[in-house]
Length: 309
Image (cartoon, rainbow, N blue to C red; front, side, top):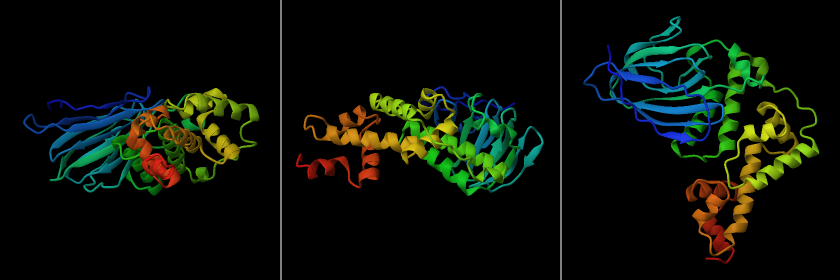
């Protein structure tokens, strides 16, 4: 009987996503504990980055939500199974992906080689009312496959998790929806072309969304909130909004935040950190990153060029 590890959990209080997680336990009582470095959740999905040293571990994902993972480890021994059927003893799984739909448990064990090993996993529980999103229930489980598009999206989400990218609710949810669509494409190439959206949003729907964003610019704004506001599924809303505005909802929210930030930065009595909080960023670093991305200069340079420094 192995000893249960005391995993370290750092939660990102971003929503009420699924509580599913990788259960990682050391196989020998005197071994160093594996560590769950960070976990964050949004309205219908959660993500976690698990890092473990060179130890022998057992792991399990119960199947309470759909599970997609990007692996970065080499093992000298071990095996992984999905529902006890799909089985793999592949040693080098760096850059490989795993997918298991809801109801399929993934488990196994590994003796890692002398390097820090990691798994970045996303647990997906799409809204039952969103038929587009729930198409992933038809996707069969798959162990250690490759797909460049999925890998890129997972790496973008991982950067949100580790703080090296913009931690914006709308951005994370957009990546989650993109992940769903890419999973469908993996299973059925016919999904490579999105169904056309006829007419985009109505004038009333667009006005409601823009007014909501303006009124809540200092807060986290989720794609699910905006979609519910106009009575559309998240999949349909993103496509209809982009057709109407020319930007994705996330890009529009980001541009509005930066637009308001420019006005506030012209006030000498406001620090850059204060401006960041007033336009919905968690800190000055997040504002700096977004401001530079959209304008090509930092807030400090913007102030200097405006004659305020």
